[in-house]
Amino acid sequence: MKKLLHTLCLWLVAFGCFAQSQSLNSVLQQAKKENKLIFVDCYFTGCIPCAQMDENVFPNAVVKSEMDKNFLMLKVDIFKDKLGDTLKVQHILNGFPTFLILNGDGKLISSSSGYKDPGNLIALFTSARQKASEHQFLSGFSTKYEEKKYPAFYIEFCKTRKGLSGSTLAAYSDTVKNFKAENALLPYLVSRSADEKAIATIFSDYNGFASLYGEDVLQPVIDYGLTQKLVKTLKTDLNDLAFERFLASQKKYFSDKSWKICLQTLGNKYFLSIKKDTACFLKFSIKNPVLYQYHFNALYSTLLVKNGFTPEITKLFCQWADAIVTEDSGLEFMKTAAAIHKKAHDEGGYNKFIKMAATYSSRYKMKAELIEPMGSK
Image 1: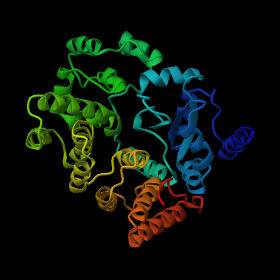
Image 2 (image 1 turned 90 degrees about the vertical axis):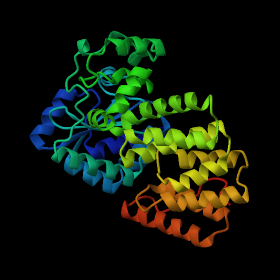
Image 3 (image 1 turned 180 degrees about the vertical axis):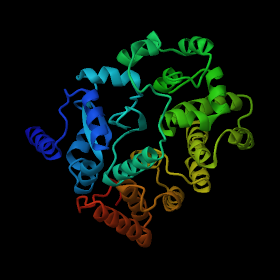
């Protein structure tokens, strides 16, 4: 523990990072003066991926160079710092760490959560800078915090994570005159759920709402709405044909890119949760390839624990890896892809992903050693 604290202290000094007590307003002023963006790292003490970011990612030479050149950094302990209470209400913090990128006017450019290796973080930086240059901001969120802008039940839930039920959301929906008004969707986004009225409204203009709040923040509500509709549909007609009909009926709401993500969620729900058929899920995923969140690595870990890697499943998993893992996917996905090919005794596939991982590590000046996931032998 002392070693970790020492490392963090050295990192803070090296970065010239803002003290946690510094006000957001002063950072905004400096960002405008220096023509930089603001990177807000929302973490909490005891969060393992947060500590991994501090130890392995933020000190990385490539990350540090990009940060020093184009960003000001503000670290906020979301449960200890006063600013944390504000950010929990003003923005959606449903996972940790959460990274917010703002411009000097306080306009939100992007919101993303979860551990990111140096390559993933550089991609986030690049995307944010591009959006800022094109004046693409997430205008669904208020630029300045004023408590009167938010429903009382929403504020209470953000602070306590209690008291937000389905009936509360339904009652709230009945009061909303304009679902595209500033902050209108926040109660749904923070709970990752919504009533039927809100779901129907959001689905009717997915692209419009995504432009207001960002796809990363909106997608959990979309996933919830789709799975709820799927379960309701299949109650009276549970078979593959009914599932295909359901997909055809929902595709119209989304762009091709967004629909691929939705398919991953729906395939997971239907084949893994309802049918309990891993082989069919993998065949479906190979047919509709997309790398979305942690479905790939999560299923790999689950099958390891349950000794679920039959010859058929192993072969299909290799095909899935080949379809979705690329040179920009991130180190952990490459390592998992290498591990499954090793399990399949596919030396060519194994070497392909090990080489990909080595190239990726070198590109972003990451630690040279490649540690394969447990159970890859």
